[in-house]
Image 1 (tube, rainbow, N blue to C red):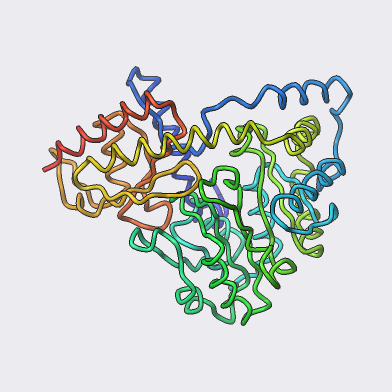
Image 2 (cartoon, rainbow, N blue to C red):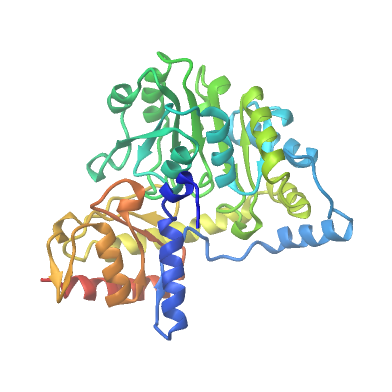
Length: 396
């Protein structure tokens, strides 16, 4: 029963594992509130679905160019210029089967064995394993709740070595919801200007769920465009998770390398879905503005309720749809034979004792936190907070 060392060393996705466990318990008749997956609970807007149906009727059912329909790449190029002050030509755009594939393509294109890739921690669960799977060494830089989970320039400077190939981070961030604002990015760029050969990969998949006054792309700052890969996609801002449509804008040689890899692995993303994405990107943005307003209300509701639970510390994230409470005060507490040693233990306990699915911070590079997705109805979120409070108060 042979399997490669690469796959044997890869960890399964913790978010997917918790979602599957929640589904299993639901199937056994348990009442479970699932706050584990990073998936908007909204349906894809009707005008986007209609565009996909029209594309089917018009015969968009064939293979596409590997990096995507030209019409979609043109729409993405225009979106980057219009909203991000980024100048990526259509030939610098690669459309993939989700932003996750964009990250995987980049790791394959940029890493040789022994190369290092800096990731800002807490980080999205798949970053570290994608890097390892492709022969690189992930170098996490940890910023805890005292820093609003945001790495600073001094930390970045200390982590860079002659083996550093690229830096990867998300803003707004999964799992913390933290947003790097313009002045904070500028301080990071000051460090990066001393290391012109290092590529920056900016995962901006949560761009449209940003509660600050502006979303700033690091590639738009002086001197950064020609060394920055900007990743985005349709899943979060347009509630199109199952459509599997991500994209990147990159320096031409990197875009061409990623298209070559994709051509040997999956080819292009679904053709009629790409045409629906054109319609979405060219729309007035009202759909994602309404979703953002709902997420902001839910964030404020959850912060208010979680701050009433003794043992949790909650910051005030400015984006995405996650909270990442610090649970350090609960370490060592017990309930029966259950001992809480870290965030993963607490997440397991909350699922079994409270019927609420969350994800332990261990999977995101920090032990003393856990992630809550508030992509659920307000009624579910209120009930989840009651259950979490009851379960935590039962700990001795």
